[in-house]
Image 1 (cartoon, one colour):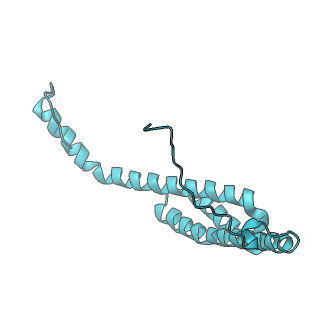
Image 2: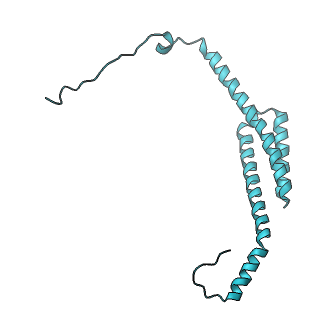
Amino acid sequence: MTITGGTALPREEIDRMMREAEQFADEDKKRRVEAEARNQADNLVYQTEKVLAEHGSKVPEAERAEVQAALDALKEALKGTDVSDITAKQSALEQASQKIGQAVYAAMQQEQAAAAGGSGGASEPGPAASGADDVVDAEVVDEGEGS
């Protein structure tokens, strides 16, 4: 702790404040670590719930149940104050939620393949696909200037 500027505090008061700051430094650090862990876990819970709501139908039931169980475990851990339990449950949810991303990506790939396969043979090729070269090399000259 640094005290700067002119203060009207007596030297004894400044010394007392310094001792208290040093005394509670560890406690403050623990509170900060807990607050950061809680914020990260709350954010992960929110994001996971949002992804499940938006893309849950694309995820197989077994994986969705695994993610939901990890989500419920983290919510339960957030009710307590054990930071190591919160971070362990957060890590488990992160690993489980990766399966959602993989399932959603696989479903999107299947949808794109189905869309490309279903419309690929029915339409006629456009000018770009026909091999015709429509490029014209030209130079623009403005004859109005300079005369």
